[in-house]
Amino acid sequence: MVRLLKIMMMAVVLTACSGTFEQLSSPTASRLDIERARENLAHIDQLTVTDEGYITYYQTLPHGYKWRTSVIKQNSYTWSCETMYYLLLKGFVIKMGYKGKGGREEHFDLAKCNALSS
Image (cartoon, rainbow, N blue to C red; front, side):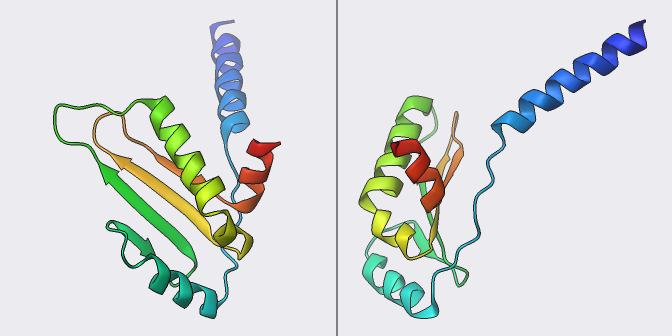
């Protein structure tokens, strides 16, 4: 009976985890678009454009401060799905990282932004 209960609890945990897993597409940006993005975004500190077409941007909070999840979600969505939407249309995937206490990483592709905006 105890073993059956443990198995059922594990199934519930696994089901909950699988329901929150996001499947993002891989970048499909062209070499030319990657080079153009690097040139156009070079002035932004902490931002890189990888050879594969990922745009990564990190912000760090000083010691003693804590990120608020609502701030992370709003800033990530606004920058990725509104400001940088034109790059998502070109096949880029955006990763935004928030370093420090309470930090996390958010990933956005065109499908995710379209789903969130509808």
